[in-house]
Structures are given as C-alpha cells and as structure tokens.
Length: 318
Image (cartoon, rainbow, N blue to C red; front, side, top):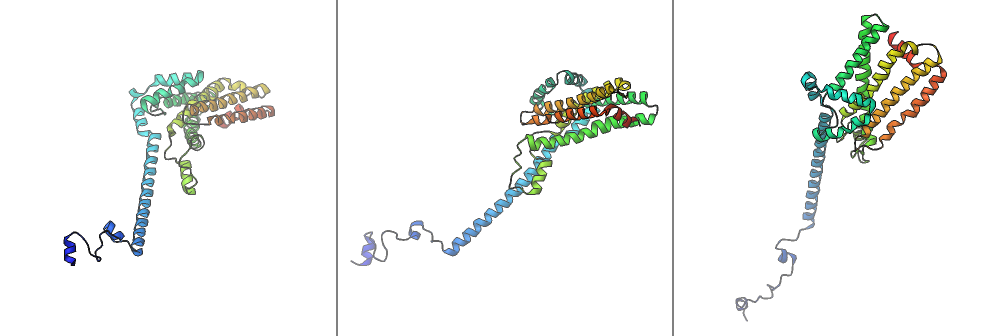
C-alpha cells in the first residue's frame, strides 16, 4: 500500500514509528550533554555560595542587632536618669521596705522580683530610689566619720569620695560586670559557644554575650542589695565600736575581725540569693565558695593578732 494511504489510515511507516523510542520523544526536551551538566553544577555551586554568603551576612547583622538589644535592655540609663530627675516618680517607700527586709528576710525581697518580671518584663530596677537612699546613708556616715576622727574639711570630702564613689559605685560597677560575665559563661548554657567558632568569636561571646537573658543592671542591683549590710556593719556598727576596736588587745582583734567576717559573708549570701532567684541560672551555689576561705582568713588573722578594723581606720585617716 502506498505511504500516503498508510498515513491516511492512522498508521505510520517504518521511518516514523508509532511509539516514542528516545528520552527526547518522552520528555519533549533534548537530553543534556556532559557540558550542560557541568554548567548546571557550576550554577548550583555558585548559587549555594551566594546563599551561604548571604546567610553569614544575615547572621552577622542579627548578632549585632541582638548585641544592641542586650545592651539596651541591660543599661536602661535614659529611663533611669529620667526618674532620677523627676523626684515625684521615685518610690522611696518601696526602697525602705526592701532595705529593711534585706536585713531581716532577704529572700522576701527577691521573691517580689517575680511580680516585677510579670508587670514590667524585666528583672532589674528601673527606679533609682534604692541607690539614692544608700548613697545618702553612705554620705552621712562619711560626714560623721570625718567630724569625729578628723577636723579637716578636705578629709571629709575625701571620705565622701572614697566611701560613695569609689567603694560603692566604682567597685560595684566592677563587681557587677564580673558577675555578669561569670553568670553568662558558667550559670547559663551559652548557645554561641561552639567548637566551630573562631577564637576571637568565642572570646567576644565570653565578654559580650549577644543573646543573654541576664541583665547587667540586675547584677548591679544585687551588688547594691548586698552592700547594704556592708554599710550597716562597717559604717554604723564599726563607727560606734571603733574606740574599742582600736585597742591593742586580743578581744578587740577578735571583735574587729568578726565584724568584717560577718559583713563580707553576708555580702556573699545576699549575692547568692540574687542570682539564685533567677529561674534560668544553674549551679549558683558556687557563689558560696568564698565563705570557707573567709573563715580560714579570719582564723589566721585573728590568731596572728592582725586587727583588720584598726588597719582600715589607719588607711582612711592616716
């Protein structure tokens, strides 16, 4: 039968088979050649490199953003100073309540933090009333010490500078910073610390954790809370007992050293309560490790006849 008649009946000739026999006939696209496959692989690799670079840039931007956010949440200086300049916004009644309970029932003060966290979504104080009151008490103590044990006006100003600015504020800033770093690296599991990070990145994460839940301002609040007992023992009680403590006998040495042991030990305990109150911190009991060291130091100094109270008074007034 002629070829044209076969095609008219819906049949194909031998040159045009009925079923497709190649991949091109099935897919309708030409089979990629080796050169085409290499081009596609290079394109995919280039796209992967571009995406990886983009992800690294986004991760870097996110870390910077988290760092800024952490610093903003930790150092609430603008709001702090706004309330400092607005006397009507200061809550001295609550600050006095906290001071009284820190001496009698310190755990009660830290339990109230949960209410503050629920209402203000932060652990640290945004009211400087506590710091103002404690600074005021320290200033009054410095003036009394200067009037009784020194007649020089310049010495009184030096006492105020040392007792308030140096001993309380500057030392407090240092202690809070060290406590913040230690807590972020030992009491919190830091997700940024991994073996794949570079040494510089790990060092940066140690001193500037970008996603820390712990506020630096809260660490400073802990120092202020603990320093209250320092003021009571070493600025009030020692001021009253100083004529007795400066006597050159064993009883004066025992009383003076015991007073310093009690104040520093209570400082460590209040500090432990502060960090232990946060639910996301672990192993905070290590903060109590200095207590045995303090007791051993007290025994050595007392048995050797070294009077800390007499030494400190000479350091301040001589």
